[in-house]
Length: 595
Image 1 (cartoon, one colour):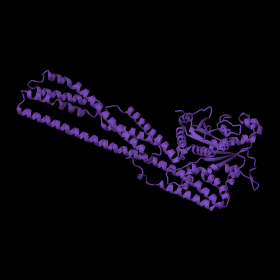
Image 2 (image 1 turned 30 degrees about the horizontal axis):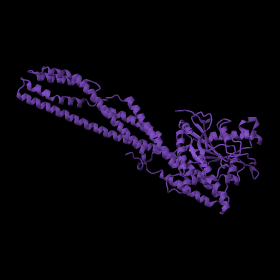
Image 3 (image 1 turned 135 degrees about the horizontal axis):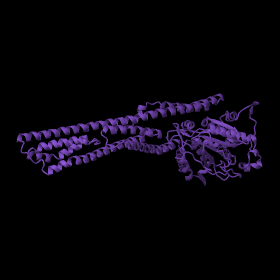
């Protein structure tokens, strides 16, 4: 397991060949080796606006992502650079540089829309990079945000509508950062200084009116406000004289605008300090392999003509991870049992106790590693495999005991059999000598250690197999009367029947122990599943409460601005979210079954 990834240069993650998206295998192999949580920062914007420079600075390097110096887009597709996170030990920073939007070589915006959507789907912080001020032209260039509900599905359910999808988007969309390059305005309103964040909020104010022009003005602003309630703005002066911009990465710090240097440092500090780990619904932390799975699922959907679906991506990832979680749990069980079990065990209960302890730990391993186990299918699979493992160990224990007892019986009783063959007991009084010797050997057998659970059964089977030999010695003993022989035959029969009854009783007791163990196993699965569901429910409620608070805040802003229709639409989304929160409180007993 790689602890840290040190990439010397970025690699292409998603190739864009003739406007067809294709995942690069080399990049996937890099992601598959990153077991740390990932913080994913993606930057999107028009070509030739300096996106790559900001990412290079985030990586702590001057060079890395290529800086184009022509009017053509230099970056094609989506490029990736994974570096150790400079402010979060044990985390990996994944930087995604996207192909410049509006490339003059493209015939339409379809491809750009998919690049834009993928950047949102994959990132935990989404940086939109543009030149100049936030005016209507800048908003028009950000028209991709108005197409998100046409490009992304939150749920695979055909019953989900636009409002429901929009309500879900906030919970998994990244934080939004607008980077304004070559910004020349003085940040003031009514002669009072304002912050870049204030400037962004003022720029997102809606215009009253129901005409087409007002709708065109309001749509991108509404989408940004609805989908990205957590947003931030940074402004940047021009970095250097125009003639030097083509060689920006080669310029020394003293050749750059001091204000620009300070602004870049502030931007990097914020992004590195405030960008969260990429998570999925339910607080599931994304690492390299999980990000790899998301990339594959989303690009596959786009390539096949479908819309990328968040729910499907998570379920596809869950299938992979839950299957691995089952194998991981079984491997842990095998390891624990291999270390603890010494066959044959003296009693079945000893073996079942070891199984129960190892099973409990295995379930814990599965619970920690699994998520979104719909209908508990994988936990049921784990339960079935653990049951089989238990039964296999019981069979191995039975066989080991049988083999041990067979060897002991052979060693202990073979001398007696040789004496019988030599006729030592074929004489008057021989039967009593034989029985006395037989009792001594039985006592010796009982005193031998480590015989296991088959000791009594194997002894009785041996004695039953030698009944004809015993009877022959009895019948040839001239010192016994016919009556004494009949009494002895009955005594042997009674002893045999008593032994059979004892074995039957022991078998019933073992069956009861097995049934008790099966019930305990079931209860352990239910117990740990219930605890996990409680944790997941608490996490989901926390997420939903955070989303609800953001939506209520945005609704309040709309009301203050006098946009009642938009506020009512937001209220619909809020109601959908509240209904979803109510569903979280369904009794666990209705959903928690492993049978």
